[in-house]
Image 1 (cartoon, one colour):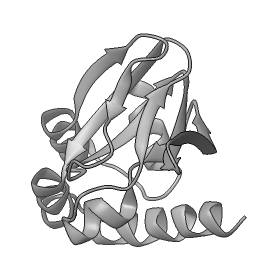
Image 2 (spheres, rainbow, N blue to C red):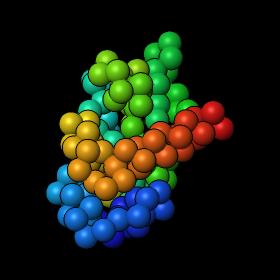
Image 3 (spheres, rainbow, N blue to C red):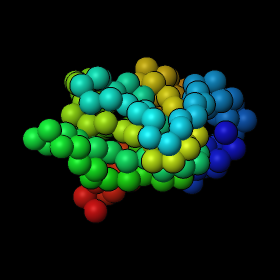
Length: 136
């Protein structure tokens, strides 16, 4: 959890109350290598922080699974299109190696934006980073 808090501090300052909010809204979960974190066809309702490990995004094209992006330790990740539009995902997210994540649901992310001192700013800066990752 300390790494998650430090990464959020890379975006905005945090006080003790902000840290309590983060600790109360994020959940930890470990995934084994090759374990599916999120499946194509389901609505993605979580944003993950990768505290340790590596994940890949894949898409099914003509019956073949194609990997098109990797996210590693220190990254925030989600199927942004599905997460924001609440539509079924066209992508899967799979752990490449043993991976520790901290995740937050869409509803809890909205609480974080409202309750954390600089929550809205954090969200804007995070979206900017995700956008730049996508175009690069």
